[in-house]
Length: 139
Length: 84
Image (tube, rainbow over all chains, first blue to last red; front, side, top):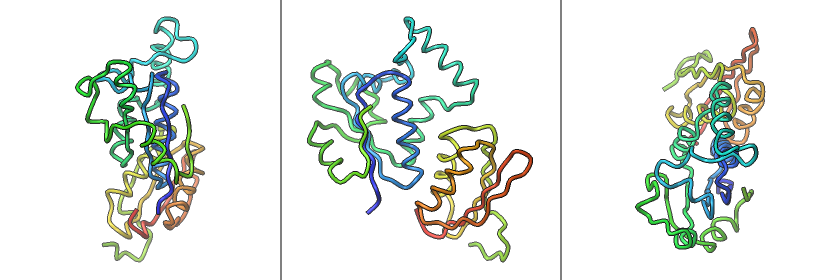
């Protein structure tokens, strides 16, 4: 049985989404199975075209901070979030969208980028996936 | 497919100038697209990837042939000894 990593992606902040996807793709590179659970604010990043429109968790300054950070990251040759999530999927990473959050925030399946989503589920799905995981994180 | 007696690579992945996590991702992609027993050469200059690619090779139970350092760049040779 391959080792497994699960991450709850609760935050919608650019820096935290980066962390989740970098750790996730790193784990895939090490041969682990990886599932990311997008819930609450994090789920909003799966709305079509929304991924890289994320604010920064600190120094956002109404979006200027996020823009400056993305510019700085490009200069440092850091991969873009869109490329990163596609690499994550290409390497076999799974993404689960929280169906309870969809109800609470009024997000329909049609509004979400369904090409990224493998499954819809709630806490049971997370627990079921995580009960035999070697690493689980909440971001 | 690899009947060569030397450790000549079948595929060369150049990640010079790339930073975390791209060298690891490119390595993993190369593993998925090459046949069994292929020899993969990674060339890069990211310090942490020089340590982390061999760590991934060990975790994936593949064969690390050699690591070379030349002019601020590293070259890592890996043999895909099993399908991963």
